[in-house]
Amino acid sequence: MRRPRTWLTLALVLAVAGMTAAVGGRLERGSAAPITIGAAVDLTSFMSPFDSAAVQAAILEVKKINQRGGVLGRRLQVKVCNHQLDPAKGKACAAKLVAAGAVAVLTTCDVEFGAPATQETINSGRLAIASCVGTDEQGPKRFGAKGKLAFTLGNVAQDEGAAMAEYAIQKGWKRAITVSDNLLELLITIDALRGASARRITAVLPYYAYVRSDKKDEPRISITARLVADLLETAGANRVLTLDLHSPQVQGFFRIPADQLTATPILVEHFRQRPDLADHVVVAPDAGEVKDAARFAKRLGVPLAIVDKRRYGDDEQAHAVTLVGDVKGKRALVIDDEIATGGTVLQAVDFLRREGVKDVSVAVIHPVLSGQAVERLRAAPIAELVITDSIPLPPAKQDPRFTILSVARLVAEAIARVHDGRSISEMYD
Image (tube, helix red, strand yellow):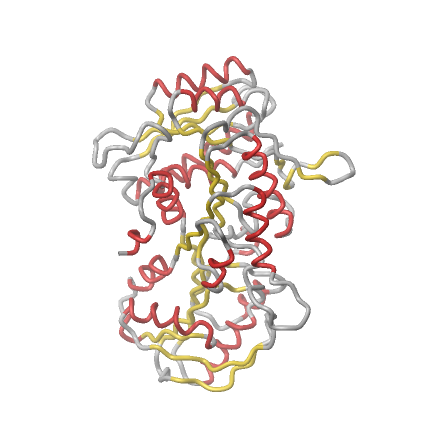
């Protein structure tokens, strides 16, 4: 059984990207006509409950996008066609959606009926994306007792560029899947696309696996972030698009174009809505985060403070020593690129409370939240934890004090720019 929520991720990437057709050129901005997303699904057989749930999730996400102003000043709409698990009907279904003006068609990747529908869409000059990558509700599809990952593409990617999104925790999976499983699935997917003669393959990684292992801080250890870069290149990726690396130097590990996006403007805009912004101070929880925190403080127009802390190795053992800056009576905003076990952030929070802050909020790009991090954060004296969905947070880990901001628009705009050959840096000018 497939993961219904996969459709949600695809709808985000497609809708917010500006809905640029793969061959047909850029869409007109500001037109009164809505932008149509097609969905070729099964609504009549044993797969219908899952496809129906997936479509409803996509429609809900499109509704949210429309409430934020749509895409290119235009509203989005979803049109559904029932392929009934029949290859011929799948092809006719895709043709019907294209004739109705769909600029993108989401369909299943099952070779029996998904591939004909996707190929029909590609032939028509529209962007077609499969809704799954050979996976089931428990994670990557495994055959027998050998536990092998499998990815079947079918005849759908020849001479077409492809963007694959990979997350540290895949939304919709019922059991925890390791980072290594996800990385291996991404590599297998890229290799399958290369074997299918894809003209260009862009690996989109909202969270870069093993990014913290970017240096030799102990003898005889691997620089795993460099190894991951080598694996992506060897698998066949022509370009990498990622978000807020732990260290900018990781970009230098690649011999192919590697673009780093930043979600800082999204977090800044959230805090800018606070009416008492003048009472805030941005706090870097350690020396390594000073540059990012300084940029954050400059954007908000508030002062900066720094927690002087000591850490040894790339683990979570860190100890606050002293504080640089004035925080007494202010509302503190602790900024970090990711939160794993929560050790760094929670030590900074406790230290700031002892220094007399009014309250503490935490802003983090990547919510890794491993081990007992969620329980520790729920028990901590934090007014608000603001994170992004670069790693989807399961409902069981959510909390009323957790605010999740979407990076879909950011990533999708970058995908559209890569596809059109436009500048990524212009997004931040």
